[in-house]
Image 1: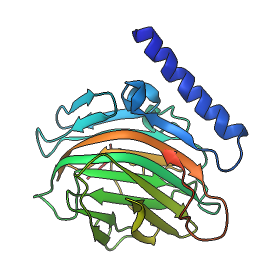
Image 2: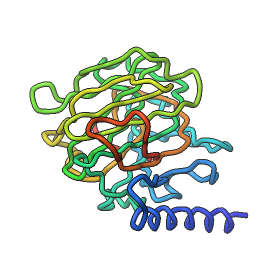
Image 3: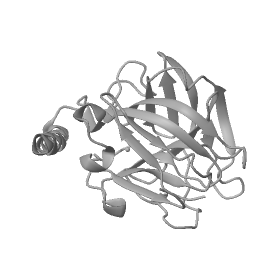
Length: 256
């Protein structure tokens, strides 16, 4: 059974790469699929943790990661085209001039950030081919953007009140030009300018890595337990501006 699962996983990754390279512009590339019953690190993502031991479990629909054993614990999944920290996931070129959408299914089961209101126990980072993009933090009742630049780096920017714990839900994070948009539950939740986080200094430092994705707990000031289902990517096609109909589907430690 183990050999069958490993073979199915490899075939899925190879098929995703082939589809992207030779497919029309509206083809979705699946980067992670929990239905294969393997964690992200078995599908080309890099899995890193520090300052403790996280709990990672699979069920029939999701992988569950829990970093609540100590608030200092950081853990998560990395995917990049250039192989950041060993990633081999088939991440396509994330060209924000053309536009693209990252789709992921997520349920936040628990989250704590008592040490800082500028940190979140679950974060997603998406960086385009020029290393500009967005980092979003998820609390149980709020989703918000991390500020870039230098003077207010990694402080709360635009935000929306939203229940992230109710169920496993689909989110679509689109980036086109200088703007991003997050949709969930069939409606727009959050939008704003893309950021550069290049002024961050630390190890590991993914913020100058093009075509990069991260999902997990990347801070020693917050903790979370979350379920992750699928992650996929698809280029945006059609008229200028962010799409409300077509999305790219996809699913994936970092700092502070």
